[in-house]
Length: 596
Image 1 (cartoon, one colour):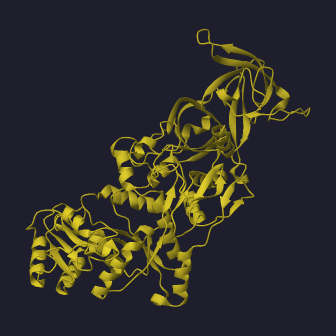
Image 2: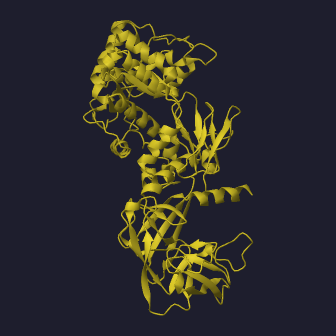
Image 3: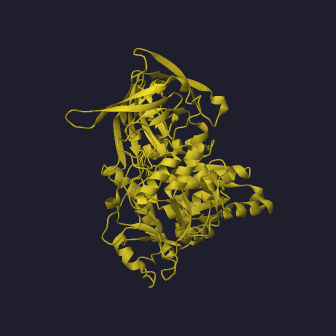
């Protein structure tokens, strides 16, 4: 649902791009005729540039990407990765990878491994600068004792529900805990006993002593430590108290000497708390800058919601090609170059925006158009018999591998008397604007000959078209007529005898709603799932060169779209292809059909 302050500022392939922050210039890319966005200014780059030019921090730039290892990274994280690693590289600095692993109940090694794989896949490397918040557990504990000794932290016996009651609201101040004024020595004793494992989970917390009447709820005596008798995936059973994210985050940045702590906008209200801790500890202050996170249409980017999709079986795991996770996009066939391009195009701003999926698809097409070899595949085969082509004869025709890359050369494709074309490329009684094959009509076969439909054979029981019979003109070999006659359509095809079977998965948006996060009262975002987000075709035929399709390799199926050989299921001789994105002209056709 479009908010009242949203503005329609452009479209990509017929899709509206909604941006809440600013007017965005729409431009035509001269190479493709498609629509893109000029990269808007990056205000964080300007901040970093000014700091470097004025010699702040000795001119050094140290950033960090600090994911929590409690799920797989998604497209929203890609913006932060590109920003942090990109700025560090641009200004001759470096970017740390740090796992903020402060909650053992939700963190797993699987997530750690997947995050590292995703960052590398996007094209970035942290070198020897791999850190964990758990590396600093002892130092964080020492900091906590120092705050207790200063009278700035206390052990509280309130339950989390009671603390919620005491916290107050945005309009009313909070109420101080009855344990807030415990003596320093009592707080130190209790905190040390918390560490030794004397108390059960949830019975006590360590809280900062700040201001229960603060207009910023984050400053109302926040929890610093809670008791969790759980194994940590790195430190094992060494600890039974764990720091809260808000307590550990700022100190971790400070310990690493981070110069620019780049966060998404939801952490803007947390910045005073991070500063308070560092001020009270007399520690080094990184400069925190907040930016608007990336929101993509027709999907959800909340880890909680993504985990629900996985756990309830709505998708086949975190790497399902319909998921907005980087693992899912990689398996779908999206390229890291396209994702980096998207992140640069959408820019860095302060206000939330909803980027249309069409923008990402534009970036994918733009990249794959240059690199993907062209092949022919028929998804829904209809048999064509060329009656005047000699039985038993076969030949190989030259086909261009990629017209965008002259160095890609040509390949040989087999031609025979019996072929397959797409079912949708033939109509027995075509409407006025249908220019493909029909009775008595002549069309061109890509790289081959002109053919004319002479008759139609239907199944005796179903009455459906079983095959069509045609004649060909031998003088039109290569696809051109020496007498200059024209046809209005060129069809792709494969040889019935020499093509190979393939499975093709057609993926669509996971949700039918452009913003499934914006659910109405009493609604569940699950109700917006697209029941047609996956269609599996098992009777496809592809040219024989694809028998050895490389898993993860990219291909353009001529006239259909861009595909990848599935990295898991595709095997030599038994290829399985995932559709990455449709071709531009087909996308426009679909959009126009939906508007009718």
